Amino acid sequence: MSQVITLFRLQKIDSQCDKIHVRLSEIEREIKEDVILKEAHQMHDQALVAERSAHEHERSTEEAVRGIQIKLEHNQSSQFGGKIFSPKELQDLQSEQSALERRRTELEEEQLNAMMILEKAEKVKREADANLAMAEQKSSSRQALLRGEQVTLQQELEKLDAERQAIRTTVSVDLADTYDKLRLQKKGVAVAMIVDECCAACGSSLTPADCQAARSPSKINYCPSCGRILYAG
Image (cartoon, rainbow, N blue to C red; front, side, top):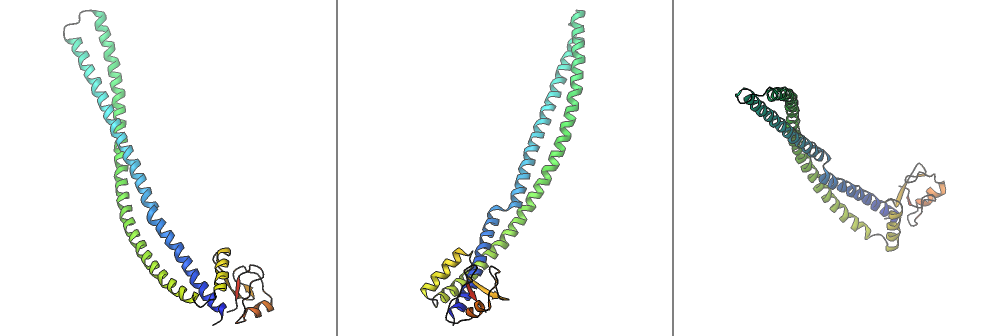
């Protein structure tokens, strides 16, 4: 068999292996990163923080209202307990009573607002819980599919590698070295097929003489533009 034909077969196998290696890298990255699950965790964490903050705000406003109520009850007890006889002291207590009532109204409005914020935060948290659970379920299914694809590709790679090794044993050492160097220099493509009198790799036109020379069963010919080995088919 012509060495060029052998190299072209080797090139096809190597190109298949390259694609498999790229896909295996993608699978590994997808398994590790899982962007959708990561985003679901981030949303859940944010919702949890917001809910805790809303709970704390609601609790603090409730305590503030309770504290004002205690002061109001104490003030009323002082006013009507029969222990205050000075008009000035009584007037001061009445003024304080008015200020406390105004403050209680403000705090009750703030408490109501805090309760509404808490209700909304709890709803968002429940939605984040459900979203995370769904994302985890989908991630589990997705990862199972990826693992299955990974095993299939690795098995295919092993078969191709065995075939590749068998073919390389039929190629001379010098030609194999040339092929390997071209693969490194030409982005993995060392052998280019001639299609419509053009190099399929770089697209350059070839002369009839170039095309004819590439059909030689004993001589290796190269594309005058990109330097790849030409295969006439």
